[in-house]
Image 1 (cartoon, protein in one colour):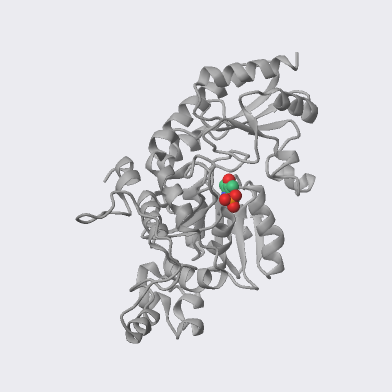
Image 2 (image 1 turned 90 degrees about the vertical axis):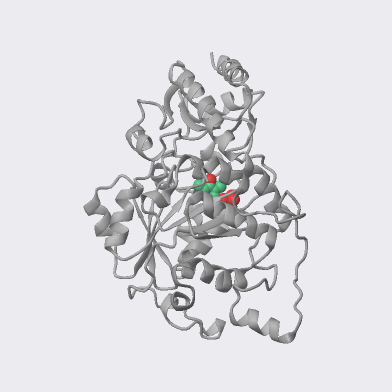
Length: 422
Ligand SMILES: *Cc1c(COP(=O)(O)O)cnc(C)c1O
């Protein structure tokens, strides 16, 4: 199936007389004919469903769809993007380990990596995503077990050179985890460029309608966990009657371990209802992503020619520093998110934003409706000035998430808000 068809059909194939639409299975529990049947499921939890803290048929249909869209062998949904980032790493790392992350990533992820994981004894080594190969190699320590980056960083909109990082991660025997939230698998499929694990905040374009939060972890099945660096995969898991994940589950070791160990213990699994809404969003994802790109390109060109605008950051523009990388990784467009710096810094940016009528001030991005956010006073408020610079944020920076309204209405709104600055 082509990707558009997968959006509609992957993950759920109803049989004779079954519902056409993925049903909402609103049940915490599943029944078995006998105690022996229950025992068998505990011996091999992949054989049947156990409990809705980590398995539900509605959610699993969506997991299979997203795995198909990304080209992975399996996926696990989480109740937020943050939970997906956390579990994707905890499935590999323990206290005393380190991992490398691009510095230009989502502000919430920086908090998780720099502060919360540190409290758990896990060190994040931040590197400049544009660093040379030798600088990135030099950042590895003997205890470094993973590399992390965002395909299209929120909100810096830097394009991550997936192949460069995949090569260096693999030379060091560790997996590359990619947060592919902004492009979605419609615009980029990181596994095709060597990523081992792909995660998303499904709260953004995948849901698309701003109706429910969620996340997902997708396993490519390509990483070799038996290379000696990952004993948790190759030695018996005492918490699961001595299961050796690589031996019992082969290529699916990572994603099954994530569910059977981490989701079992942390329980951040989405509800069936949430998965149902997410699935509705996914059905039209391929159409929406293309339209966001068309609208955003027109808005980016308008902003670039505007006298109040110091600079526009949209990798789709030929003038953008990341345009060449965007052509390689995001040939069909670079999403609806644009950031730009208004002349006059923080006060001008705030005045402009407060003058907008159609575009709303939201702590959200990738909504179906046009929305704006001032990163320095919102998502990146916790960061020090140095971290702000490292994350590519300026006081006059506005993050504009172009929606699916008629682009002329979006442009009219921007024009009248800029007029307030005259
Ligand atoms: C929003 C976001 C997250 C966090 O996801 P939540 O669903 O808000 O928990 C992670 N990464 C990126 C790139 C995001 O935009």
